[in-house]
Length: 211
Image 1 (tube, rainbow, N blue to C red):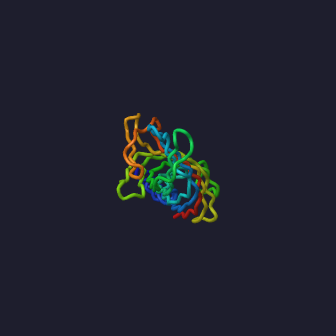
Image 2 (image 1 turned 90 degrees about the vertical axis):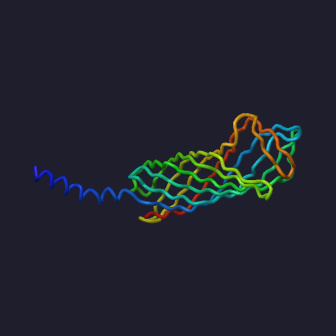
Image 3 (image 1 turned 135 degrees about the vertical axis):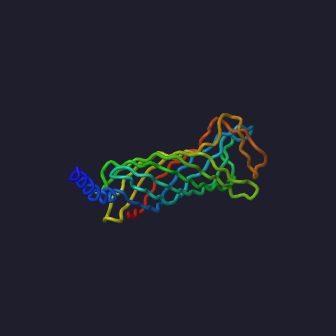
């Protein structure tokens, strides 16, 4: 019995460093291009507000749980002009500039173990988006958002690699047509249409530092 106990202890002491070595942290600053959707309106003059496409950037931090999985915090920043579409066709001048900051918690699944140089992955996450117009008389709002995406990592060495990914992360705005969207530039508030999510799709790349 004593011999068995000693063997178990020895196995735990030998196996513990190996188990710890399967974990780690990856930090990736990234930049890319983001395409944005819009919101339907219910007004006699305008029927849609568009959020233009533009650059995005941010940083992600992944805690590797083992060979194939990890949990991630991601911050994504985008700044874009917004334009109104007339019911009769055509687009109104720029309404305002919208700054979006997304904060997401993701679950990441890799398709190869961490010893491979090439590691495809998918991610699924939940979080919030803060939407802030560039006008002092219009406050920011924070709404629920979710994310789904995928990509690949390629490690140039044990501690440095590159990461590319494609991600969609819609932001919930409202339910039904009873909500309102207010604009200090044009004046007043309008009923929103049936679109309840502000759509977002981005492709980005960055350098990964693994510890």
